[in-house]
Structures are given as structure tokens and as C-alpha cells.
Length: 622
Ligand code: C2E
Ligand code: CA
Ligand code: CA
Image (cartoon, rainbow, N blue to C red):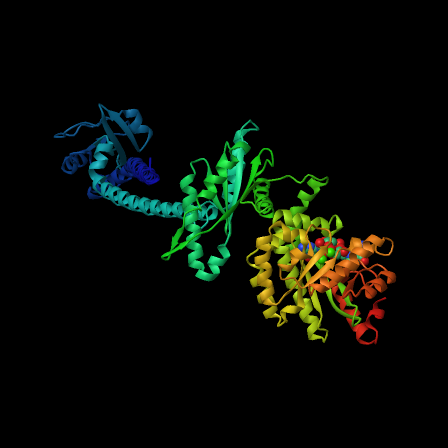
């Protein structure tokens, strides 16, 4: 039954009930009233008759008057001191009250043959006689009562029914509106307003509920995540309304290929998450084909045909995780694993080295660290061997974990790379480092800042525009920023690396090949890339005094790089002997503990200040 009908019936019933109750109370009050008031009235009547008689009247005088004052219901009689009835000639009836009662009280009730009598006796002063008025009335029934009061009660009932019906309708419509508002709020809280798809929380809950229903049984579940590529470009070049429309169309297409209880949700930004029931590892190829296939055909937006691609990451229950947040996190990590290998889809690959669990625990901590400012940049000075000037510094990330203390960058950078957090981390590094660089410039030290990029950053379409806007914001010449990329990172996806490096080169940013010598690329390879500098890996530099082979490698690399017009940096300069040897080999720039360790920003500034006040800058550091 509808709530409105229920409310209506309820309030009508209660109003009718109230009227019935009041009628009952009124009825019994009326009965009570007559019982208590009538004897008084009869006495008054008797008294009035007595007043009309002469003083000390005779029995005949009394008897003569009474018949004239009788009515249909009032029977007047006279009794003597013993309560005996003294019959009056011409009287209609006699007193139906027994002598005993008459002598015991001055008024009373009696029911005789279904007739109700109320009587009152009043003595006539100066005589042995008493006048008795016996008032007869038929028993008051509810029916009689209603005859008198029925109309006003019916009227009151009508008004009250009208009022309660109206009230019930108003309350019902208020309830309905409240219910609608509640449902709307609930829908909003669980859905993405743009695409109408469930949001991250709703999907998370559905996944957890599905897992709970499975009760650890043999069923499987695939949690997929699709990241749309080129989305940022579309947003930037065609406007947000195009980007929004694209997301709406993607949502529609995903919904079209899914059947309940499978469910798609907008995760955030350009990421969609999908839960597929009973989908195991064997079905992954089909899943990838179906889901990525939804993006194959052109999207028609504003009269244009747009093509986009997506990267798919998949995590499986129960192999990879058993809770929704962990499954979603791993599906997201799988996207980056796919990108790293230049694939369009990948199943989550568990970290296989020891300490994996701890690393996984650190993923969330790292996310928070970035947000809560637990990360810091240290700056390791770079010494120009020709001018003996500190010409810049490499920015190196430092993380002091609130529980685990210092965590080496090698460890957390790897986590950041696996989870995609590297995107956010690199942005933070660039923002912080360029701000620091601008601060140095403003104080008269026109230093360069080197920042490390990961392979994944080469897939970040937003990176180059971000660098451009940061340089612009801080009014820094682009060549003051050096980006260091390892050979391995470049070779993971050479075509993409080339495209991204060209954009950076066009911007005027210096490009440095980090850890040179550890990868498989040759200098010849690098000729095709817009590289400005190579950084010989510290493993060769640190050992060049002891190992003739390493010294030869360093020497040959310096020669070849110079032939190609590249600057050479040697990192891992741990002592004076290495520095001297590098000088002799014509190396351009040196970096290492012998010159300075990576320093907090304030200490790096102190170093620059000390150098300012001396003639020989390099000596100031050692
Ligand atoms: P990297 O880019 O090769 O950085 C140089 C590393 O060598 C630094 O280690 C530095 O402290 C260390 N080093 C410098 N001079 C010497 C020396 O004379 N002897 C020795 N033995 N080592 C020296 P760190 O800071 O632990 O960084 C390790 C790696 O972590 C870096 O290697 C880099 O690959 C990565 N990393 C650090 N910060 C970032 C960052 O902001 N972004 C990215 N993507 N990676 C970073
Ligand atoms: Ca580096
Ligand atoms: Ca290096």
C-alpha cells in the first residue's frame, strides 16, 4: 500500500475514533448531569409551590393546589409524617416510591417498569405534610442523545475529517518530497554526475559485496581499469565540453557491452573501472578485446570524428587481492605495468622481490607522503671542471617515513613507478626544484637544476605543458632545467621517448642521459635523439683509479661524446684522485661525494654563499 494511502487511512481512523470518544464522553456527562441536577430543580419547584400556599396551610389547601401544577412528567403528591400517601382527588397517578425511601432521604432515583423516576420531597413548614415531586422520564438512550446533538457532532466530524484528510495529504506530499530528495542525494553520492555511472565508492562497495557473497568459493572476479589516452589533448585543444562528451560516450559504450551484475564505474578523471563476475585469467584476452574494442570506432563530437585509445589494467580476485581497494589499486598499477612494456593491456604482476608486502604497505603511505609534505628535495652540486664553478645541482628526492624513518629513493621511486604515483611525484619534484632554482637566480646564482624523469613520465602528455608553464611562472630560461633520463627508460619505448624528448628540446630544456654505460644503447643510437649531455654511471667513475678497464671506458666515452657535441658529466666522484683524472680526460662536469653530498635546500644555498666569498669555488666545498 502506498504511504499516502496508509497515512490517509490512519488519520481518518484516528479522527473518527476521536469523534466517537468525545461523543461517548459527552453522552455520559449528559447522563451524569441530569442525575445530579434534576433533584435540585425538583426541590426548587416544590419550594415555589409552598411559597404560594398560605402560612400553615391545611391538607385540603395543599391537595387543592397540587393537581394544577402537575405536568406530563411531574407527578405532585403529598405525604404525612409517616410517609403515607394522602391521596389527592383528581390526581393522575400515585407516587411509585416506597415509604421507607421517602422517610430515609429527601431525594432519590427509582426504576420501575423501564421507567426512570427522580423524586424530591420538601416538607411544608408548620405542617406534618411533605410535598413529593416524582419526575418521570424515559431512560436516556444514545439514540435520544444523538437526536439532540447529532447534527453538531456530524458537522464537527465532517470538519475534522476534512481537516485530517487535508493534513494527511500535506504530510504525505511532504514525506514524498523528502523521500525523493533522499533518493536523489543517495544517487548523487553514489554516481558520477557527468556520466551517470556509479562512482568509485559505489563500485568499491559492489565489489566488496560481491566478494562477501562468494564466501571464499571457487568463483573469480576481474577488476579492470581503463585509462583513456590522448584525453588531456582533447580537453586542451577542443575544450572541456568535448572532453566531457567523450567521457559520456565512453560510459555509454562500456554500459552497452556489460550485462548485470557486471558493472562499469567512473574511477576518476579519464579512468573507468569495471567489475566482471566469473572472469578468470583465461578470459583476459576476450575481456581486453571487448573493453578496449568499445573505443575502436570514432567518437562523433561536435561534428568531429575523434579516435582515442585506452590502456587496460586487470587485477583478479582472489589471486591478486581480496578487497575492493586492493583490487582497484592493483588494476591501476597494471595500467602502468602495461605502459612500461608498451602494451595496451596487462594483468597485474606481483612484485616478486622480497619485501613486496612491505612495499605494498608503503604505496598508501607514499600517496599520503606526497599529500602531507613528507617528501623533501636534496640538491647535489655539479662542478664545472673548466671554470671550477658550481653550475648547478641535481635534485634528489628524500622521504622520511613517520614510522620507518629514511627510505632510500631507489625503493620508493620503484613503488611510485609501479603504482603510477611517479606522475604526481615528478610534478612535485619539478615544481619544487624550479622554485628553488628561481630562488637561486633571484639571489644572483644563475644555476641549473637537474631533475630525474622515469620511463613512465615519457608517457605523461601533461608533462611538457607543465614544464613550460613552470618555467614561465618562474621566469626561468628553459636551458636552466636539465632532465635526466636513463638509457633503459629511453629504450623501453624509443618512439614515444623520441617524441617526448623532441617536445622538451623544442622548449629548450637540456636533456641528459643518466647512468650512461649501464644500458645497451650505443652513442650512435643517441645521435637520433635530441640529447645535450651524458652522465657516465658512477660504477665506472668510482672504480676508475683501481680499474684500468673502467678508466678506459670513461676516457672513450668522453671522447666519443665530445665528438658528437655532447657534454659529459661524471657522477660518483668520491675522491681527489678521480677528480684529477677526470680533469685530465677533459670531462666537463663532475658530481660526487668528494665535491658535496646531496644537501638540503638551505645548505645548498649556504654553499653558494661560501663560494661567492672565495676565489676558488670548488675548494670552498672540500
Ligand atoms: P641517480 O639519478 O643516478 O642519482 C645519483 C645517485 O648517486 C644519488 O643517490 C646520489 O646520492 C648518489 N651519489 C652521488 N654522488 C655519489 C658518490 O660520489 N658516490 C656514491 N656511491 N653515490 C653517489 P640517491 O639520492 O640515493 O638516488 C638514487 C636514485 O634514485 C637516483 O639515481 C635516481 O635514479 C632515483 N631518484 C632520486 N630522486 C629521484 C627523483 O626525484 N625522480 C626520479 N625519477 N628518480 C629519483
Ligand atoms: Ca640522476
Ligand atoms: Ca645516475
